[in-house]
Image (cartoon, rainbow, N blue to C red; front, side, top):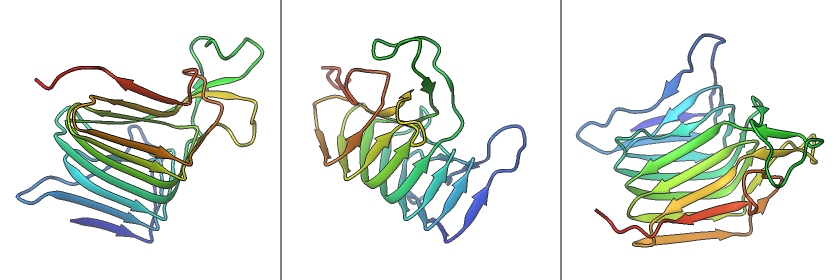
Length: 198
């Protein structure tokens, strides 16, 4: 078990990005972040039980690798903000040449078995992709997925994207706010691929 409580962690301006994670040993990996400010740091969370509460993640990503078999993540009362962004590579049906459009950093959780809860999370100018191949439990409540609060007219390629098989899936999204997402016509993009487990 690896816990970080009431700290500020800032990445220095060097090549590459620092990563926080934990090596899986004989017992399951557990990573707890409580009342933390993390700036420019990536979290690698393969086969892990991750708890993030009362924290502020700035320009920091969360991701899994291709080796991930099982992931449990709980994020509560957390602001997740991105400021590093670049122009979109092409126009989208929802935008025109006179509108601003921004591509954002992506957080990718790709795992065979996924149990993710987002409760009172504010994701600004970011993208969260959850791809679960088999067992899926996703609960998102009282959360916001939004573009640039200083320029409410701008659009961005971000938001929440859920990809899962209907076999063993339990997905709930309630009382959430989605705004200014340019990548699809819907702010929540849910994809059911119809595949059977192999």
